[in-house]
Figure 1: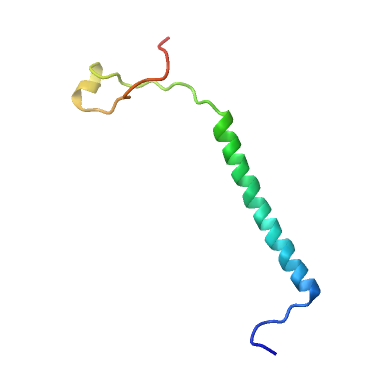
Figure 2: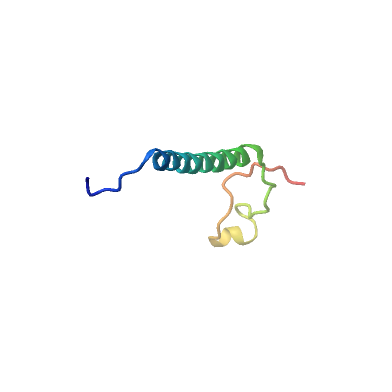
Length: 70
């Protein structure tokens, strides 16, 4: 017999079932991440505008806002 463990028919079936379950879990998790990324729309976040307040003092500010001011 070889140095490895000889698996019977049940052992091979169990190995394939476990491998299939792991692949299914990874696929469902990735699908969920893609679904959330596509369907979610974050709210606008207040930010400094260039030339106003602390933005003139080398603080970070948005390059171009995609939100309309209220």
